[in-house]
Length: 283
Ligand code: PAF
Image 1: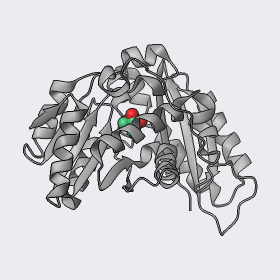
Image 2: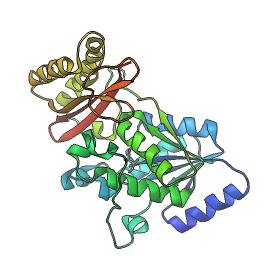
Image 3: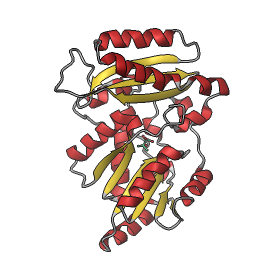
Image 4: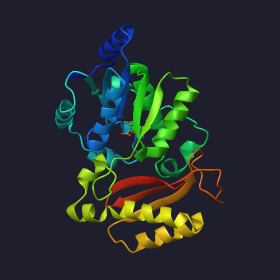
């Protein structure tokens, strides 16, 4: 498998591939790969000649220094996992912070029509400036034809779609289904840090989302939200940070339901110091 640590060398290769009409898929990751990531790579491989997987724990999108420090870094295991899918059609880009940022580890400031202010944006200051900065840079280096993002980070997906529209970046952004453990817990690199007890209760998040979906059929968003808050107040190992029923397009919380709009429920929960997010389509 080809592994690059240097952006110029990778750009040289992807330019060469494009000149030979190869389609390039791209799966951006922060490593600690799991089946959810692999499913994105597999979709990418079906639709492209090669798939570039970036593995980079991007410092500018972390508002919490401890979270950045503790984020799992498992490059060797990640490469071994990717090799189980394909050794010759996957290209890994695992840059250093310097290769991406030089000596200026700062994010650009973005406005994504207000999408950046909701939910994750409200609770993680500067997060989407960091995400926008790294994804834009990676798009410039790799110049992929299509890029694959999981819907677990649905807000991020909507923001990346806005980013490519605003900057006219010629890449198709594709949202892929949330990959779940058998008990419903959304796959996440952070799950590896859960204690046995936390892992046991974590499926409660998706279970509650599914019940919220059923309740939203007959009850108002306010009533469903109150019900969810009550459920989490009875769960000592999980602390609810937010639950929001929002318009899929604007991500603004729903005030009055309309049959013409689509909604999703979004949730962020702490298990100890581990932050887990999930979401579900409601209609
Ligand atoms: O979703 C992630 O893992 C990250 O936010 C991304 C898109 C790789 C940017 O660092």
